Image 1 (cartoon, rainbow, N blue to C red):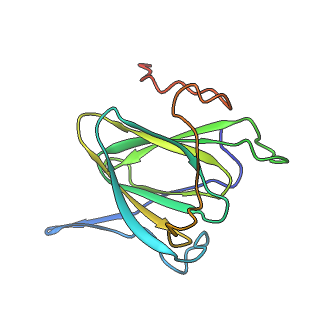
Image 2: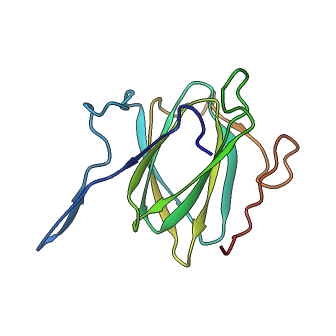
Length: 153
């Protein structure tokens, strides 16, 4: 189920004799908001980094190395997808840019056997004196249920 306001864009890859090039975000992209800060985080295989949400910033994720499953849960009052959860699998084998708007709970797990490297282009710089972040435990958080166990289809 797609969560309202989440944007998933496939990234065009331009290979040639020297390697590959792909653009992650341009200021003339229709879903470009504005720039606040860029940072890279990594996640070891099988680790779950969840749950958190922001009240003032939006996240723009691109997984550069490895693969992740990003999970987004909507419990925003008045949202048409309140109570819904969206999963987006992406990374080096499926290049995408995912915009997670403020107010949505989100987190991810690294898939496979490689450390995942995720670029986040946030719309506001991190303020250590007043972090724009609310957190919940990844498992049994008492707000909503999600099973991080791998599902073999």
